[in-house]
Length: 280
Ligand code: DGL
Image 1 (cartoon, rainbow, N blue to C red):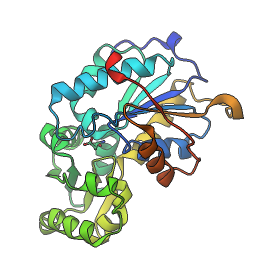
Image 2: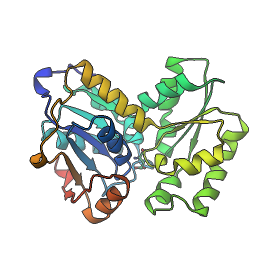
Image 3: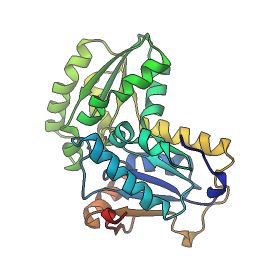
Image 4: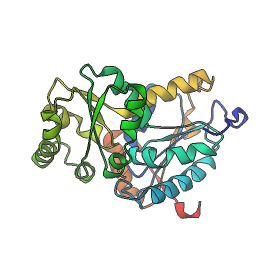
C-alpha cells in the first residue's frame, strides 16, 4: 500500500464502497450490519457492468475513475466490494493511494484457509477472477499445503440479476457447475463473486451440508471493522437523521438499481443519483 496519510482520515467521514453494479450491496449490507455507525458512499458502475468478462486494463481504468469519484467525498477508506476489481485492480490502486483501501479476496481467502479441515478448497467466481488466480495466490501464501479448485460460473450473475434466486433454472445451472467440485471432495467453498451470497441457500443445498460456505462480503466487513478500530477511526457517534447515512450513486439509470437495492437492504433506499463516471 502507498504511504497512508492519517491527516486525510476523519473518524466521522464516510466509507467509500464500490462495485461493478448491484452485487457490492451484499458487502455494503454486511458493513451496515456490523458497523452501523458508519456512513457509506456507494458507487455501482451499472453502465459498464459486467466487469467479470472484461480485461484487466479496462477493469483497472474503471476502478481508478471510481476511486477518484469517491475521493471527492473525503472518504476515510475505500472498500473494493467487487471480486473482479479486487482481483484485477487492487494492486494498482494500492500503489499510490494515501488512505487505506481493502478488497474482498484477501479476507475470504484467509477465512477459507482457517476453516478447511481436509485442505481442499473450491472457489467459484467470474471468469476474470478465476483467470487472475488471486484466490489461489492468497491461499497458497497462507498455507502452501492447501489444494485449490477454481471454477468460473458466469451464468450466476445474470440469473441473480433476473431475480431467479430460487428457481429450477438456477438449480440446474448450479448442479452443472458444482458437480466437479463435489466429485473432488472439497470441504470449503468460497463464494468468490458479490452476487453468489444471494443464492447461498441453493448453492449450499447442492454442494451438500458437509461443505462450509465462505462469504467474503461478511469477512470483509469484519476486516474493515478491525482495521478502523486499530487506526482509532471507528465512528463513535450514530450519524443523525439528516446526515445522509447511506448515499448511492450509479453510472446508469437509477430506478432498476433502487429496486434491486431495496430487495436486499432493509434500510429503505429511497434514491440513487446518476453520475457520468467517465468525467473522473
Ligand atoms: N461484482 C462482480 C464480482 O464480484 C460480479 C459482476 C460483474 O461481473 O461485474 O466479481
